[in-house]
Length: 154
Image 1 (tube, rainbow, N blue to C red):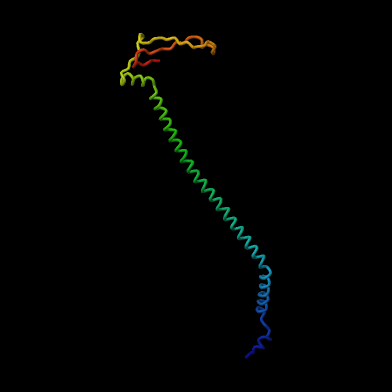
Image 2: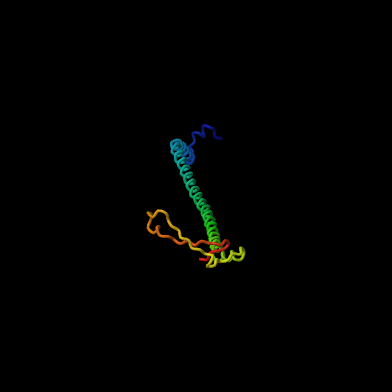
């Protein structure tokens, strides 16, 4: 039986000595490089956070671009519809303003007739004070409608 003293004095295996040496060296390295490792880890975390923020910013900008693209397409479609409605209304206004349509309505619905030669009188209109612009001192001819409920044909 070996005693405790014998075990301490006995030659130790090569593995035990090497293990203790590595353990002491690891403790020493850990204590010495603790601040450096902390700084490098903080730098890595900050770099990763910056990278994540950059990627999120790019993705957010892309999502906003897609959203605006959809809105632009909707506005273009709305504009096309409004332009088509505007074109139809212009055609309708031109149709309603046509002189032949107005004359037809006047003849059929209101019972109006075109004036005869004897119903039109010519009147001379003079401009007072002959010191005006050129051509104003000459009389102009204006047609006067003598009979009510008649329409003029141009």
